Length: 102
Image 1 (cartoon, rainbow, N blue to C red):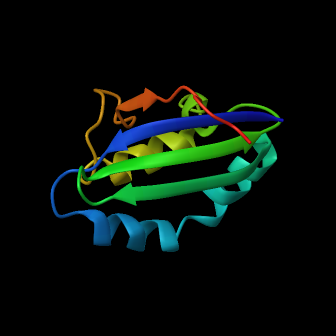
Image 2 (cartoon, rainbow, N blue to C red):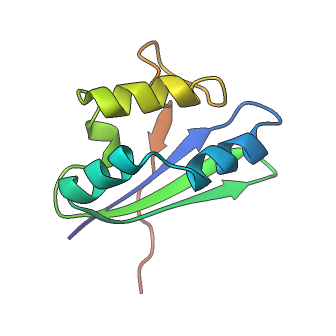
């Protein structure tokens, strides 16, 4: 199983709406993530920096590599008013390197 950790950037004062939208994640997106092999996906918020830290365990592709899928494109556009994004509406992200594991 592969592991991936990355950081994304929220726009100011959007965490409540971000969480609300994820609480109501589209069933077809949830199924796509599972079908792709993502067995575990967690997102954490740091209120001091307003950054999101995501962690995934996957047997296949990770969520950020699914940008060719119409469901993912639609989700990225839906979330783009809350996050710092690239021109294609994908979240700007910084991959995080593991420095410790127990």
